[in-house]
Length: 487
Image 1 (cartoon, rainbow, N blue to C red):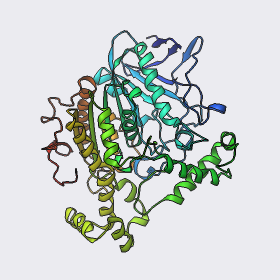
Image 2: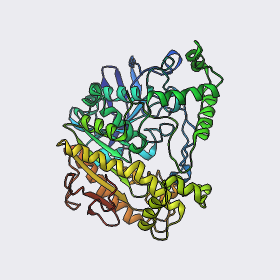
Image 3: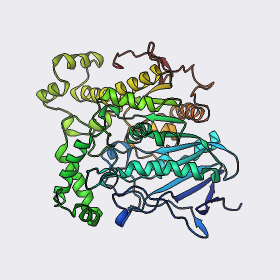
Image 4: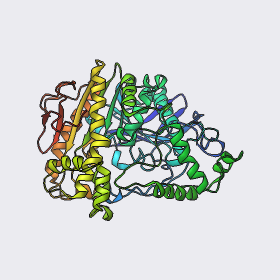
């Protein structure tokens, strides 16, 4: 069979047939962000002449090892600042207008890549007859440093916008429908979608959104907070934030030195039992968490939203951390804000140790409660939101149903996650069956805006009275907001 070819206005690309799916890798959606384009908005790709080879992945964004390696496993890929590429999986680069799913990976805005084998969209493309697009965007300071007067833009957000605009202009060449785009993200990717929904000129680029484990409880940086963080980093690099040549010096810093300074910045600002990353999107003005969620809900008007979290998100950060096994009692009490709040969590997890309770608190504050509040804000506006809670883990796993554990089930890529400790000891047959049910739901949502299918119990829309959630685990079914944390 001849290699699949997609012809766009930028040029033609030659991909590869793999398991009945046409794979196109290393597809540039913006110009290389190097030189004067470092710390600048994504610039349009100029195109190329001839037939471009799209059978190999491009480099991923420069990054240090993930802080969750002990949970999810490790990966090794070539890194380079010239990283703004897409990975596209399609049943065929033909004229059929298929629904499109655009993936924004997680990693706290400092690690990961849309092109990792973890996120291979081939199975979703094949089983759902959809076009899958994974996005590599800039990470760390290179993507998310914000300092008015030095770096006035949010480069990582501009990368995501550029990718969505590229999809709008070119996805028809890959057999996709530019008018039927769902954007899906996990963790930092989901939180970034929330930021995109707040931008009127951007939210028109997609019809639906899937928000997996979006850490909306972390909020987002104000300009002042982002500036403070940037000033810290600049000083670690030996650059005076007030100097007139700060930007030019930043652009001259070698990547290893920049990554080392990022690591030091994270260590300096680390708080007890806190999971705040050093970089985040920046809000245009001061907002409380309810105000931010309301702004996101306003942006979701007319869209369908699938939103959820895992049952034990916080265990990903705490269960493998020796310092969290026997934390000081006074620090634990202070983190809960008093004995009354601590007792409420003890009641919810009988016999649980301090680490479990702290992880429960982080799960609720950062992931579960804000997701419930966002779904309710959408419903209050007459919008469409569906909620889920992923609650599966291998028997006896110290990580429980932790952050990221739902990802192999959504993508069906268990082989790529073979060194993930969070999956160790799981029943292979049970995992495959649960994955099939989830994939059908995600595909149904991408195609029709409703995750219901005949392999699941009825899945009603979220409403502010019953606040029902699809519980996905060893047993699947609808549950109410039993803990009362939805607010």
